[in-house]
Amino acid sequence: MDQREKGLVILYTGEGKGKTTAALGIILRAVGYKKKCLMVQFGKTWFTGELVGIKKLSPLVKIIQGGKGFVDILGDQLPREKHQEAAQKTFNYLYNETTSGKWDLVIADEIVGAVSGKILPLEDAVRLITDKPASVDLVLTGHNAPQKLIDLADLVTEMQAIKHPYQKGVLAKKGVDF
Image (cartoon, rainbow, N blue to C red):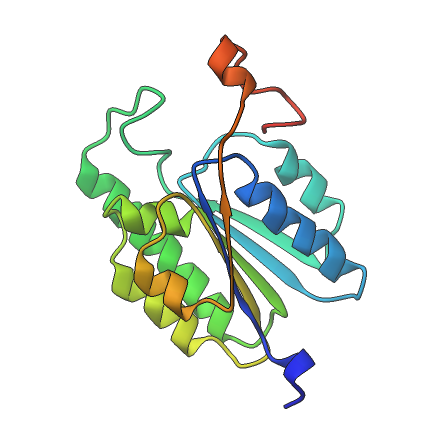
């Protein structure tokens, strides 16, 4: 296989904003080459602009939201076990789709946060990386990437928060943050 055809493992991590946005940028670029793209989001269960935007790129792009919301924030009241069950179900779907050979690009959005938050076992994320077809590009996003995922990735970018409107009390902005 030509090195330019080898599927990459790309990791966007860090406390700064822009991890999901960067992954969506790769989808936009891939669609320009008629590549089939799947985005599976862990923990995101609410409306975001990307849900509607990505549907406009159908049939080349599909987005699936999994999970029960983020753990311990935004008023979360669910027992941890419910989050773990939902994350495992989401992972099983993601793994089956990634290894199916149907997709050129797969985004595992917020999987890193699910791992670092101990909602999903690290071994699952490692298995996803090691079992993906050789030609599939795989993007993982989320806070606090474990060293093992950093070591397995071909490209790692850490988003660093320097300044954010939230620090001045400005909440998330429609069309920019969600």
